[in-house]
Image (cartoon, rainbow, N blue to C red; front, side, top):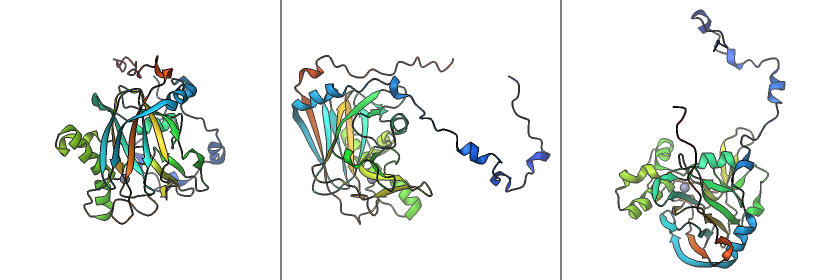
Length: 300
Ligand SMILES: [Zn+2]
């Protein structure tokens, strides 16, 4: 292939320090180019809304876990079951992790979910899994905070842009050791579930979906912001398990994330996880999501 650029000579390396700050003459024209949504999601498996809605009209609760404030718990959801994360007692943000319960190496893929759907998720969106399995792990089937939409600050609820709060970032920013960040809470919960030491399983903790959290990017500097969650006791987000799931849920030390996180200064409340089986015939022909069909050859 011919070179499409001129090799930079040694002399040309000595460019003025502010060279890159000079906008080209056609800068406005370049900025005015039309944005395109990156992924055409019409190619994804369809969201059969009526099917799920019929199934969720006949739910029987089969399990329930109360997640304590500044702590995390795990829960199992068989494929074809529903689960809810429910606000109780007070406004509280939740940080869930999801794994294939038969293979912890397959887990929720926050970044690709964001690219396929949006910065914030709601009913009809799927939670996709990591490579190479990459398939729908769960589908959001109900969201009582869907009314929130987008606020005047550009904020929304249930983002997949932030990661979980963690003790390493906290150490960098504040210098102290704080052990009840969502990352550590999830690590302890997974260690308890697997019976393994924290150092053997910590790498399985991954980026979360920030359930009930209200976030966005500031309009001027595009920095990640949070504001007090609109969640009220009784609000919930409901998921349908497309494969066998192991879930972990941390009740974030930030509480409603309206003031701070990674400390003990904010009121925190429990979160409830409920698992349901559907007794509807709507799921009779339903099949768990299959692993991604890509050959895995990567050109070799
Ligand atoms: Zn957190």
